[in-house]
Image 1 (cartoon, helix red, strand yellow):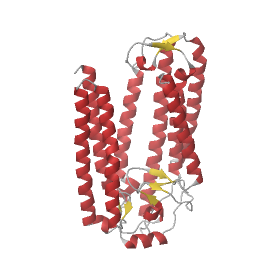
Image 2 (cartoon, helix red, strand yellow):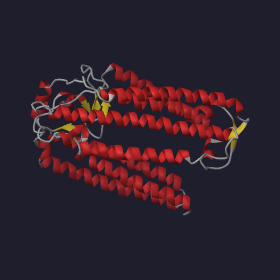
Image 3 (cartoon, rainbow, N blue to C red):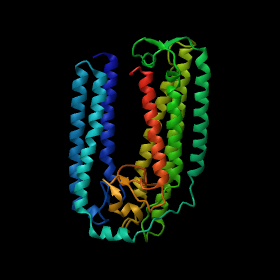
Length: 376
């Protein structure tokens, strides 16, 4: 195994343990009363049901980590280290889906009948009068849109100054030294990704800043404060991701154009430093959210005995505990039941339009990518 292969497989191993750790932690930072996408009720979620569900989940997580490592390293040691990296990662991520579904189904059997009656009494809590993350999210959205449009304009204008034959996208990242006919599709691919992803993250930050709170009744305002802090933190994280994505893809596009115009022989070191800074930012953000707990769970101490309110307590409104569908709820974003952050209300018209537009944009980018790499 050469040095490059060793680096790729070492990164693969690190990724497996990082993702495995994150999934291992998820059920341990959930709001009290919730287990694997199911509202069990505050009492049942802390008793034998919790211990049994966690045992099932922990054993499954450990098995998935071992299998993904074996698959990835087996393929890598046969000389195909890039496929080993990709296939091992795919096994890692896809295997968590059946594990979650099975654990979710077990959790449903533990749900308290009182939780169902409580959901019918609960009211949606929208209270978004103080959205401290709103201004930063709005600024990030504006900056991402302006920067993305400027990047598309720059790439379009630079196209004329390029020679007829330019290095392929693969050769720019060290995979061969091939040339291809220049085309707007190739030159505009990275700016197009920036135009979709950076504003999308910033828009999510704005929606999260205005997301519905699922507070606990009779908690003396403690649950409200926890929700506000968590909502602001998540809004800042999404805004930061939007700006980071814009910066990374902007630097990547700029350096590519320099190579294509003959002003540089290869991509510079700046893109690597930017990527490293983004990874560090994402890691710090993840730690910050876990300290708060999902939905501010760790800040609700002293009030966690009070029951949850709103759609978060209504098992009938959730598909597999991860998809919220409630046409009568005006909220676009709601707190997710399993994992970290917020999810869209798929019963809301605005959410449906946003999701449709985003999926169409992803399909368009996939088509452009296939064209840029001469797949057809």
